[in-house]
Length: 112
Image 1 (cartoon, rainbow, N blue to C red):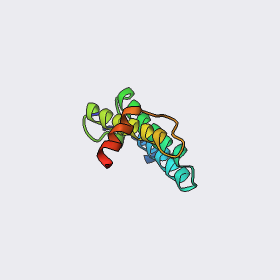
Image 2: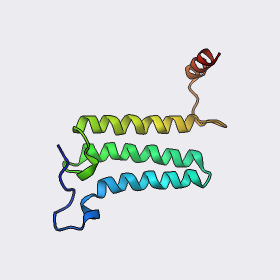
Image 3: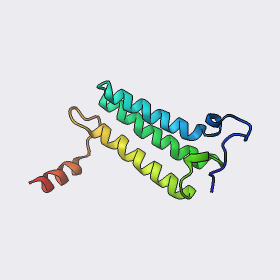
Image 4: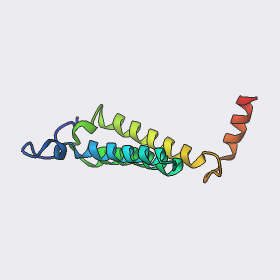
């Protein structure tokens, strides 16, 4: 479902797979930023790229190779993984941008 070409068959291969290339390009750029020692910015970009993949999967009827399973499963997988990566990168030490108090208690309880 939705695995058809995202562009006409006469278009070159990269144009037919632009949804997948968009998500992969964002993840690749995020990994490059992490390698250049900007951990938080890179991981936020990776998570946002996955969230963009969930949105693209929801918004477009045909997304080429970005479609792996059913539309619901793809959206759920891309969305949950993207949200988790963004949330964890915003909570990363040192100097977290987001603090969730009950998670501190959970970590202290499990690490004791």
